Image (tube, rainbow over all chains, first blue to last red; front, side, top):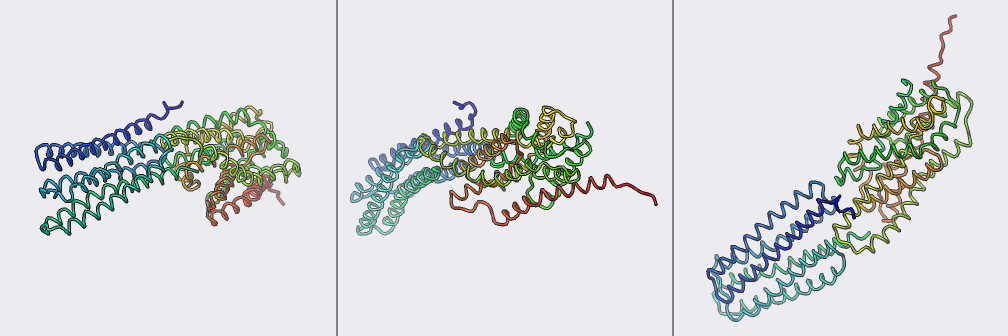
Length: 216
Length: 313
Protein backbone atom coordinates (compact mmCIF):
# COMPACT_ATOMS: atom_id res chain seq x y z
CA UNK A 1 0.00 0.00 0.00
CA UNK A 2 2.75 2.45 0.95
CA UNK A 3 5.34 0.91 -1.35
CA UNK A 4 6.08 4.26 -3.00
CA UNK A 5 7.61 5.36 0.31
CA UNK A 6 10.11 2.51 0.26
CA UNK A 7 11.83 2.81 -3.12
CA UNK A 8 15.26 1.97 -1.70
CA UNK A 9 13.95 -1.17 -0.03
CA UNK A 10 12.38 -2.31 -3.30
CA UNK A 11 15.61 -1.58 -5.14
CA UNK A 12 17.50 -3.56 -2.51
CA UNK A 13 15.09 -6.48 -2.75
CA UNK A 14 15.59 -6.54 -6.51
CA UNK A 15 19.41 -6.41 -6.11
CA UNK A 16 19.37 -9.33 -3.67
CA UNK A 17 17.21 -11.30 -6.12
CA UNK A 18 19.78 -10.47 -8.82
CA UNK A 19 22.55 -11.62 -6.48
CA UNK A 20 20.83 -14.95 -5.87
CA UNK A 21 20.08 -15.36 -9.58
CA UNK A 22 23.74 -14.69 -10.32
CA UNK A 23 24.74 -17.28 -7.72
CA UNK A 24 22.53 -19.84 -9.49
CA UNK A 25 24.22 -19.00 -12.80
CA UNK A 26 27.70 -19.35 -11.21
CA UNK A 27 26.67 -22.70 -9.83
CA UNK A 28 25.22 -23.78 -13.21
CA UNK A 29 28.52 -23.02 -14.96
CA UNK A 30 30.49 -24.74 -12.22
CA UNK A 31 28.42 -27.91 -12.65
CA UNK A 32 28.84 -27.77 -16.43
CA UNK A 33 32.61 -27.30 -16.01
CA UNK A 34 32.85 -30.23 -13.59
CA UNK A 35 30.81 -32.50 -15.88
CA UNK A 36 32.94 -31.52 -18.85
CA UNK A 37 36.10 -32.28 -16.88
CA UNK A 38 34.81 -35.62 -15.60
CA UNK A 39 33.57 -36.70 -19.05
CA UNK A 40 36.15 -35.19 -21.40
CA UNK A 41 39.10 -34.20 -19.18
CA UNK A 42 40.87 -30.85 -19.46
CA UNK A 43 39.79 -29.25 -22.73
CA UNK A 44 38.95 -25.92 -24.34
CA UNK A 45 35.31 -26.15 -23.27
CA UNK A 46 36.43 -26.67 -19.63
CA UNK A 47 38.61 -23.54 -19.81
CA UNK A 48 35.73 -21.57 -21.34
CA UNK A 49 33.42 -22.66 -18.51
CA UNK A 50 36.04 -21.64 -15.90
CA UNK A 51 36.09 -18.17 -17.44
CA UNK A 52 32.28 -18.06 -17.37
CA UNK A 53 32.23 -19.08 -13.71
CA UNK A 54 34.78 -16.37 -12.94
CA UNK A 55 32.70 -13.81 -14.86
CA UNK A 56 29.61 -14.56 -12.75
CA UNK A 57 31.66 -14.57 -9.52
CA UNK A 58 32.98 -11.07 -10.37
CA UNK A 59 29.49 -9.91 -11.19
CA UNK A 60 28.39 -11.12 -7.72
CA UNK A 61 31.06 -8.87 -6.15
CA UNK A 62 29.71 -5.88 -8.06
CA UNK A 63 26.12 -6.58 -6.95
CA UNK A 64 27.29 -7.02 -3.34
CA UNK A 65 29.00 -3.60 -3.44
CA UNK A 66 25.79 -2.05 -4.75
CA UNK A 67 23.80 -3.74 -1.98
CA UNK A 68 26.16 -2.42 0.69
CA UNK A 69 26.08 1.09 -0.76
CA UNK A 70 22.29 1.10 -0.82
CA UNK A 71 21.98 -0.24 2.70
CA UNK A 72 24.19 2.51 4.08
CA UNK A 73 22.09 5.15 2.38
CA UNK A 74 19.33 4.48 4.93
CA UNK A 75 17.59 1.51 3.36
CA UNK A 76 16.23 -0.97 5.94
CA UNK A 77 16.45 -0.80 9.72
CA UNK A 78 20.00 -1.21 11.12
CA UNK A 79 19.40 -4.72 12.42
CA UNK A 80 18.27 -5.94 9.00
CA UNK A 81 21.24 -4.23 7.32
CA UNK A 82 23.68 -6.08 9.57
CA UNK A 83 21.87 -9.39 9.08
CA UNK A 84 21.90 -9.09 5.29
CA UNK A 85 25.55 -8.05 5.17
CA UNK A 86 26.65 -11.00 7.32
CA UNK A 87 24.48 -13.34 5.26
CA UNK A 88 25.95 -12.15 1.96
CA UNK A 89 29.49 -12.43 3.36
CA UNK A 90 28.74 -16.08 4.19
CA UNK A 91 27.04 -16.81 0.86
CA UNK A 92 29.85 -15.36 -1.24
CA UNK A 93 32.23 -17.97 0.15
CA UNK A 94 30.48 -20.58 -2.04
CA UNK A 95 31.32 -19.14 -5.51
CA UNK A 96 34.88 -18.65 -4.24
CA UNK A 97 35.05 -22.37 -3.41
CA UNK A 98 33.71 -23.15 -6.92
CA UNK A 99 36.53 -21.08 -8.42
CA UNK A 100 39.10 -22.63 -6.11
CA UNK A 101 38.04 -26.16 -7.16
CA UNK A 102 38.16 -25.30 -10.87
CA UNK A 103 41.59 -23.64 -10.54
CA UNK A 104 42.95 -26.60 -8.56
CA UNK A 105 41.85 -28.89 -11.38
CA UNK A 106 43.31 -26.65 -14.12
CA UNK A 107 46.63 -25.73 -12.50
CA UNK A 108 47.40 -29.20 -11.13
CA UNK A 109 46.01 -30.91 -14.29
CA UNK A 110 44.04 -33.31 -12.13
CA UNK A 111 42.42 -36.50 -13.34
CA UNK A 112 39.89 -38.56 -11.38
CA UNK A 113 40.68 -42.30 -11.21
CA UNK A 114 37.78 -44.63 -12.08
CA UNK A 115 37.60 -46.12 -8.56
CA UNK A 116 36.31 -42.85 -7.11
CA UNK A 117 34.47 -41.44 -10.15
CA UNK A 118 30.94 -42.30 -8.94
CA UNK A 119 31.56 -41.00 -5.43
CA UNK A 120 32.95 -37.72 -6.79
CA UNK A 121 29.89 -37.30 -9.04
CA UNK A 122 27.65 -37.97 -6.02
CA UNK A 123 29.56 -35.45 -3.92
CA UNK A 124 29.15 -32.77 -6.60
CA UNK A 125 25.46 -33.55 -7.12
CA UNK A 126 24.56 -33.43 -3.42
CA UNK A 127 26.68 -30.31 -2.74
CA UNK A 128 25.03 -28.48 -5.64
CA UNK A 129 21.59 -29.59 -4.46
CA UNK A 130 22.40 -28.10 -1.02
CA UNK A 131 23.32 -24.82 -2.67
CA UNK A 132 20.07 -24.75 -4.65
CA UNK A 133 18.08 -25.38 -1.47
CA UNK A 134 20.06 -22.70 0.35
CA UNK A 135 19.20 -20.15 -2.37
CA UNK A 136 15.53 -21.16 -2.12
CA UNK A 137 15.72 -20.78 1.66
CA UNK A 138 17.14 -17.24 1.43
CA UNK A 139 14.42 -16.34 -1.06
CA UNK A 140 11.79 -17.66 1.36
CA UNK A 141 13.29 -15.62 4.19
CA UNK A 142 13.01 -12.46 2.11
CA UNK A 143 9.48 -13.13 0.90
CA UNK A 144 7.74 -15.38 3.40
CA UNK A 145 8.63 -17.11 6.62
CA UNK A 146 7.07 -20.49 5.87
CA UNK A 147 8.99 -23.63 4.97
CA UNK A 148 12.42 -22.47 6.16
CA UNK A 149 12.83 -25.09 8.90
CA UNK A 150 12.08 -27.99 6.54
CA UNK A 151 14.87 -26.77 4.24
CA UNK A 152 17.32 -26.47 7.16
CA UNK A 153 16.77 -30.09 7.96
CA UNK A 154 17.24 -31.24 4.31
CA UNK A 155 20.44 -29.18 3.92
CA UNK A 156 21.74 -30.54 7.22
CA UNK A 157 20.99 -34.09 6.06
CA UNK A 158 22.82 -33.41 2.76
CA UNK A 159 25.82 -32.08 4.65
CA UNK A 160 26.06 -35.27 6.73
CA UNK A 161 25.74 -37.32 3.56
CA UNK A 162 28.56 -35.31 1.92
CA UNK A 163 30.77 -35.82 4.99
CA UNK A 164 30.18 -39.54 4.72
CA UNK A 165 31.09 -39.56 0.99
CA UNK A 166 34.16 -37.41 1.71
CA UNK A 167 35.43 -39.87 4.34
CA UNK A 168 34.78 -42.82 2.04
CA UNK A 169 36.66 -41.04 -0.78
CA UNK A 170 39.66 -40.38 1.45
CA UNK A 171 39.76 -44.02 2.45
CA UNK A 172 39.62 -45.17 -1.18
CA UNK A 173 42.28 -42.70 -2.23
CA UNK A 174 44.76 -43.62 0.50
CA UNK A 175 44.13 -47.35 0.14
CA UNK A 176 44.81 -47.18 -3.59
CA UNK A 177 48.25 -47.66 -5.18
CA UNK A 178 48.39 -44.12 -6.59
CA UNK A 179 51.53 -42.05 -6.15
CA UNK A 180 51.56 -40.16 -2.86
CA UNK A 181 51.66 -36.76 -4.61
CA UNK A 182 48.57 -37.66 -6.61
CA UNK A 183 46.83 -38.83 -3.41
CA UNK A 184 47.59 -35.50 -1.73
CA UNK A 185 46.37 -33.55 -4.76
CA UNK A 186 43.07 -35.47 -4.74
CA UNK A 187 42.78 -35.05 -0.97
CA UNK A 188 43.00 -31.27 -1.38
CA UNK A 189 40.36 -31.38 -4.12
CA UNK A 190 37.95 -33.56 -2.12
CA UNK A 191 38.29 -31.32 0.96
CA UNK A 192 37.46 -28.27 -1.18
CA UNK A 193 34.44 -30.07 -2.69
CA UNK A 194 33.18 -31.06 0.78
CA UNK A 195 33.46 -27.45 1.88
CA UNK A 196 30.60 -26.49 -0.50
CA UNK A 197 27.93 -28.42 1.44
CA UNK A 198 29.51 -27.37 4.77
CA UNK A 199 29.19 -23.71 3.81
CA UNK A 200 25.63 -24.19 2.47
CA UNK A 201 24.76 -25.74 5.83
CA UNK A 202 26.32 -22.78 7.73
CA UNK A 203 24.32 -20.31 5.64
CA UNK A 204 21.14 -22.33 6.07
CA UNK A 205 21.50 -22.34 9.87
CA UNK A 206 22.19 -18.61 9.80
CA UNK A 207 19.00 -18.02 7.77
CA UNK A 208 17.05 -20.05 10.32
CA UNK A 209 18.46 -17.97 13.20
CA UNK A 210 17.63 -14.74 11.37
CA UNK A 211 14.05 -15.93 10.91
CA UNK A 212 13.72 -16.92 14.56
CA UNK A 213 15.28 -13.62 15.63
CA UNK A 214 12.48 -11.75 13.87
CA UNK A 215 9.86 -13.35 16.09
CA UNK A 216 9.00 -11.19 19.09
CA UNK B 1 5.00 40.74 23.88
CA UNK B 2 8.42 40.99 25.57
CA UNK B 3 6.98 39.28 28.64
CA UNK B 4 6.18 36.20 26.54
CA UNK B 5 9.88 35.60 25.76
CA UNK B 6 10.38 33.50 28.93
CA UNK B 7 7.57 31.18 27.81
CA UNK B 8 8.87 31.02 24.26
CA UNK B 9 12.34 30.11 25.60
CA UNK B 10 10.83 27.39 27.81
CA UNK B 11 8.86 26.04 24.82
CA UNK B 12 11.95 26.14 22.61
CA UNK B 13 14.03 24.14 25.13
CA UNK B 14 11.14 21.70 25.63
CA UNK B 15 10.92 21.11 21.88
CA UNK B 16 14.69 20.72 21.54
CA UNK B 17 14.81 18.15 24.37
CA UNK B 18 11.59 16.18 24.09
CA UNK B 19 11.52 15.61 20.32
CA UNK B 20 14.04 12.82 21.02
CA UNK B 21 11.33 10.92 22.92
CA UNK B 22 9.22 10.82 19.74
CA UNK B 23 11.76 10.30 16.96
CA UNK B 24 15.08 9.69 18.78
CA UNK B 25 15.26 5.96 18.14
CA UNK B 26 14.27 6.34 14.45
CA UNK B 27 16.78 9.16 13.78
CA UNK B 28 19.71 7.83 15.84
CA UNK B 29 19.45 4.46 14.09
CA UNK B 30 19.28 6.21 10.69
CA UNK B 31 15.86 4.79 9.87
CA UNK B 32 14.46 8.26 9.25
CA UNK B 33 16.27 11.41 8.11
CA UNK B 34 16.51 14.13 10.76
CA UNK B 35 14.85 16.65 8.43
CA UNK B 36 11.82 14.40 7.85
CA UNK B 37 11.53 13.58 11.56
CA UNK B 38 11.87 17.24 12.62
CA UNK B 39 9.22 18.46 10.17
CA UNK B 40 6.79 15.67 11.11
CA UNK B 41 7.43 16.26 14.81
CA UNK B 42 7.00 20.06 14.54
CA UNK B 43 3.77 19.78 12.52
CA UNK B 44 2.19 17.23 14.87
CA UNK B 45 3.30 19.14 17.99
CA UNK B 46 1.54 22.24 16.65
CA UNK B 47 -1.59 20.31 15.62
CA UNK B 48 -1.71 18.61 19.05
CA UNK B 49 -1.31 21.92 20.86
CA UNK B 50 -4.08 23.58 18.84
CA UNK B 51 -6.56 20.69 18.94
CA UNK B 52 -6.13 19.34 22.46
CA UNK B 53 -3.90 21.72 24.40
CA UNK B 54 -6.82 23.53 25.98
CA UNK B 55 -7.49 21.13 28.92
CA UNK B 56 -3.91 21.26 30.25
CA UNK B 57 -3.75 25.03 29.87
CA UNK B 58 -6.94 25.38 31.92
CA UNK B 59 -5.62 23.05 34.68
CA UNK B 60 -2.28 24.85 35.07
CA UNK B 61 -3.77 28.34 34.81
CA UNK B 62 -6.25 27.36 37.55
CA UNK B 63 -3.62 26.20 40.07
CA UNK B 64 -3.24 29.68 41.49
CA UNK B 65 -4.13 33.28 40.64
CA UNK B 66 -1.26 35.16 39.04
CA UNK B 67 -0.53 38.44 37.34
CA UNK B 68 1.74 39.06 34.33
CA UNK B 69 4.83 39.74 36.48
CA UNK B 70 4.33 36.44 38.32
CA UNK B 71 3.79 34.62 34.99
CA UNK B 72 7.18 35.88 33.79
CA UNK B 73 8.80 34.78 37.09
CA UNK B 74 7.26 31.30 36.66
CA UNK B 75 8.55 30.80 33.11
CA UNK B 76 12.03 32.10 34.02
CA UNK B 77 12.17 29.90 37.14
CA UNK B 78 10.99 26.89 35.08
CA UNK B 79 13.61 27.58 32.41
CA UNK B 80 16.37 28.01 35.04
CA UNK B 81 15.41 24.78 36.80
CA UNK B 82 15.54 22.84 33.53
CA UNK B 83 18.97 24.37 32.79
CA UNK B 84 20.39 23.68 36.28
CA UNK B 85 19.15 20.07 36.37
CA UNK B 86 20.51 19.50 32.88
CA UNK B 87 23.90 20.92 33.93
CA UNK B 88 23.96 18.39 36.79
CA UNK B 89 23.16 15.67 34.26
CA UNK B 90 19.81 14.84 35.85
CA UNK B 91 16.82 14.01 33.68
CA UNK B 92 14.29 16.78 34.11
CA UNK B 93 10.59 17.18 33.44
CA UNK B 94 9.47 20.58 32.14
CA UNK B 95 5.97 19.82 33.46
CA UNK B 96 7.32 19.36 36.99
CA UNK B 97 9.46 22.49 36.70
CA UNK B 98 6.48 24.57 35.54
CA UNK B 99 4.16 23.25 38.27
CA UNK B 100 6.88 23.68 40.94
CA UNK B 101 7.37 27.31 39.90
CA UNK B 102 3.60 27.96 39.87
CA UNK B 103 3.41 26.55 43.41
CA UNK B 104 6.25 28.84 44.54
CA UNK B 105 4.22 31.86 43.44
CA UNK B 106 1.06 30.26 44.87
CA UNK B 107 2.71 30.01 48.31
CA UNK B 108 3.56 33.72 48.14
CA UNK B 109 -0.03 34.51 47.20
CA UNK B 110 -1.21 32.06 49.87
CA UNK B 111 -3.55 30.73 47.25
CA UNK B 112 -3.04 27.17 45.98
CA UNK B 113 -5.75 25.02 44.42
CA UNK B 114 -5.07 21.85 46.46
CA UNK B 115 -7.55 19.67 44.55
CA UNK B 116 -5.89 20.62 41.25
CA UNK B 117 -2.43 20.07 42.76
CA UNK B 118 -3.44 16.63 44.08
CA UNK B 119 -4.63 15.62 40.63
CA UNK B 120 -1.36 16.78 39.04
CA UNK B 121 0.89 15.01 41.58
CA UNK B 122 -1.15 11.79 41.33
CA UNK B 123 -0.68 11.89 37.55
CA UNK B 124 3.10 12.34 37.98
CA UNK B 125 3.21 9.02 39.85
CA UNK B 126 0.75 7.52 37.39
CA UNK B 127 2.82 8.39 34.29
CA UNK B 128 5.72 5.91 34.60
CA UNK B 129 3.61 3.25 36.32
CA UNK B 130 0.84 3.59 33.75
CA UNK B 131 3.33 3.55 30.87
CA UNK B 132 4.92 0.39 32.29
CA UNK B 133 1.56 -1.40 32.36
CA UNK B 134 0.50 -0.09 28.94
CA UNK B 135 3.84 -1.19 27.42
CA UNK B 136 3.39 -4.73 28.78
CA UNK B 137 -0.15 -4.99 27.34
CA UNK B 138 0.72 -3.40 23.98
CA UNK B 139 3.84 -5.53 23.57
CA UNK B 140 1.94 -8.77 24.16
CA UNK B 141 -0.97 -7.77 21.91
CA UNK B 142 1.19 -6.51 19.03
CA UNK B 143 3.56 -9.48 19.29
CA UNK B 144 0.60 -11.84 18.95
CA UNK B 145 -0.44 -10.17 15.70
CA UNK B 146 3.10 -9.62 14.38
CA UNK B 147 4.18 -13.24 14.88
CA UNK B 148 1.17 -14.47 12.93
CA UNK B 149 1.96 -12.34 9.89
CA UNK B 150 3.40 -14.42 7.08
CA UNK B 151 5.69 -11.73 5.75
CA UNK B 152 9.29 -11.73 4.65
CA UNK B 153 12.22 -9.67 5.92
CA UNK B 154 11.59 -6.70 3.62
CA UNK B 155 7.87 -6.46 4.33
CA UNK B 156 8.50 -6.78 8.10
CA UNK B 157 11.12 -4.08 7.84
CA UNK B 158 8.87 -1.68 5.90
CA UNK B 159 5.99 -2.36 8.29
CA UNK B 160 8.12 -1.59 11.37
CA UNK B 161 9.55 1.59 9.84
CA UNK B 162 6.15 2.89 8.78
CA UNK B 163 4.71 2.03 12.20
CA UNK B 164 7.61 3.75 13.97
CA UNK B 165 7.11 6.94 11.96
CA UNK B 166 3.33 6.83 12.62
CA UNK B 167 3.87 6.19 16.34
CA UNK B 168 6.49 9.00 16.49
CA UNK B 169 4.04 11.40 14.85
CA UNK B 170 1.33 10.38 17.30
CA UNK B 171 3.74 10.84 20.24
CA UNK B 172 4.60 14.31 18.86
CA UNK B 173 0.88 15.11 18.69
CA UNK B 174 0.47 13.99 22.34
CA UNK B 175 3.59 16.00 23.32
CA UNK B 176 2.16 19.18 21.81
CA UNK B 177 -1.31 18.60 23.26
CA UNK B 178 0.00 17.84 26.73
CA UNK B 179 3.09 19.97 27.20
CA UNK B 180 1.94 23.23 25.61
CA UNK B 181 0.38 24.07 28.99
CA UNK B 182 3.85 24.18 30.61
CA UNK B 183 4.88 26.90 28.20
CA UNK B 184 2.03 29.40 28.06
CA UNK B 185 -0.67 28.40 30.61
CA UNK B 186 0.63 30.97 33.10
CA UNK B 187 -0.03 33.77 30.61
CA UNK B 188 -3.64 32.64 30.36
CA UNK B 189 -3.81 32.70 34.19
CA UNK B 190 -2.39 36.24 34.09
CA UNK B 191 -5.01 37.25 31.53
CA UNK B 192 -2.42 38.15 28.86
CA UNK B 193 -3.38 35.46 26.34
CA UNK B 194 -6.53 33.64 25.32
CA UNK B 195 -6.45 29.83 25.48
CA UNK B 196 -6.24 29.61 21.67
CA UNK B 197 -3.36 32.12 21.45
CA UNK B 198 -1.57 30.32 24.31
CA UNK B 199 -1.88 27.02 22.41
CA UNK B 200 -0.70 28.65 19.17
CA UNK B 201 2.31 30.48 20.66
CA UNK B 202 3.22 27.50 22.87
CA UNK B 203 2.89 25.05 19.98
CA UNK B 204 4.96 27.26 17.68
CA UNK B 205 7.72 27.73 20.25
CA UNK B 206 7.95 23.95 20.89
CA UNK B 207 7.96 23.36 17.11
CA UNK B 208 10.73 25.96 16.76
CA UNK B 209 12.83 24.06 19.33
CA UNK B 210 12.25 20.83 17.40
CA UNK B 211 13.25 22.36 14.06
CA UNK B 212 16.27 24.36 15.23
CA UNK B 213 17.97 22.48 18.04
CA UNK B 214 16.75 18.90 18.46
CA UNK B 215 19.22 17.20 16.11
CA UNK B 216 21.99 16.62 18.67
CA UNK B 217 19.57 15.40 21.33
CA UNK B 218 17.78 13.10 18.88
CA UNK B 219 21.07 11.59 17.73
CA UNK B 220 22.64 11.14 21.17
CA UNK B 221 19.87 10.91 23.78
CA UNK B 222 17.76 8.76 21.44
CA UNK B 223 20.61 6.27 21.17
CA UNK B 224 21.26 6.26 24.93
CA UNK B 225 17.65 5.99 25.94
CA UNK B 226 16.28 3.33 23.65
CA UNK B 227 18.84 0.67 22.86
CA UNK B 228 16.12 -1.74 21.99
CA UNK B 229 15.20 -3.89 19.04
CA UNK B 230 12.97 -2.11 16.47
CA UNK B 231 9.78 -3.80 17.66
CA UNK B 232 10.39 -2.82 21.30
CA UNK B 233 11.29 0.73 20.20
CA UNK B 234 7.94 0.90 18.40
CA UNK B 235 6.12 -0.29 21.55
CA UNK B 236 7.94 2.31 23.66
CA UNK B 237 7.06 5.22 21.36
CA UNK B 238 3.44 4.07 20.96
CA UNK B 239 3.10 3.63 24.74
CA UNK B 240 4.55 7.08 25.33
CA UNK B 241 2.02 8.61 22.91
CA UNK B 242 -0.93 6.75 24.44
CA UNK B 243 0.05 7.49 28.05
CA UNK B 244 0.71 11.18 27.46
CA UNK B 245 -2.46 11.47 25.38
CA UNK B 246 -4.46 9.88 28.23
CA UNK B 247 -3.20 12.54 30.66
CA UNK B 248 -3.95 15.21 28.04
CA UNK B 249 -7.59 14.13 28.15
CA UNK B 250 -7.44 14.47 31.96
CA UNK B 251 -5.95 17.92 31.48
CA UNK B 252 -2.70 17.23 33.33
CA UNK B 253 0.72 18.04 31.83
CA UNK B 254 3.11 15.12 32.39
CA UNK B 255 6.64 14.25 31.32
CA UNK B 256 7.18 12.37 28.04
CA UNK B 257 10.59 11.25 29.35
CA UNK B 258 8.97 9.59 32.37
CA UNK B 259 6.46 7.86 30.08
CA UNK B 260 9.37 6.54 27.98
CA UNK B 261 11.23 5.34 31.08
CA UNK B 262 8.12 3.50 32.33
CA UNK B 263 7.66 1.88 28.90
CA UNK B 264 11.32 0.81 28.70
CA UNK B 265 11.03 -0.76 32.18
CA UNK B 266 7.89 -2.58 30.98
CA UNK B 267 9.81 -4.02 28.02
CA UNK B 268 12.51 -5.11 30.49
CA UNK B 269 9.90 -7.00 32.54
CA UNK B 270 8.58 -8.84 29.47
CA UNK B 271 12.03 -9.77 28.21
CA UNK B 272 13.42 -10.56 31.65
CA UNK B 273 16.25 -8.11 31.02
CA UNK B 274 17.45 -4.98 32.74
CA UNK B 275 16.81 -2.30 30.15
CA UNK B 276 17.89 0.61 32.32
CA UNK B 277 21.04 0.59 34.48
CA UNK B 278 20.57 1.01 38.25
CA UNK B 279 22.71 4.17 38.24
CA UNK B 280 20.52 5.70 35.52
CA UNK B 281 17.42 4.81 37.55
CA UNK B 282 18.83 6.59 40.64
CA UNK B 283 19.45 9.66 38.45
CA UNK B 284 15.89 9.51 37.10
CA UNK B 285 14.35 9.27 40.58
CA UNK B 286 16.59 12.04 41.95
CA UNK B 287 15.58 14.31 39.06
CA UNK B 288 11.97 13.31 39.52
CA UNK B 289 11.85 14.25 43.22
CA UNK B 290 14.11 17.31 43.06
CA UNK B 291 12.61 19.19 40.09
CA UNK B 292 9.35 20.51 41.69
CA UNK B 293 10.96 21.77 44.97
CA UNK B 294 13.94 23.31 43.11
CA UNK B 295 11.61 25.15 40.68
CA UNK B 296 9.41 26.22 43.59
CA UNK B 297 12.43 27.55 45.51
CA UNK B 298 13.87 29.40 42.50
CA UNK B 299 10.49 31.02 41.73
CA UNK B 300 10.17 32.13 45.38
CA UNK B 301 13.72 33.53 45.43
CA UNK B 302 13.24 35.48 42.17
CA UNK B 303 9.89 36.84 43.31
CA UNK B 304 11.28 37.71 46.76
CA UNK B 305 14.31 39.45 45.24
CA UNK B 306 12.09 41.46 42.89
CA UNK B 307 10.10 42.80 45.82
CA UNK B 308 12.97 43.77 48.10
CA UNK B 309 12.72 47.44 48.89
CA UNK B 310 15.37 49.83 50.11
CA UNK B 311 14.12 51.39 53.34
CA UNK B 312 16.32 54.32 54.46
CA UNK B 313 16.89 54.65 58.21
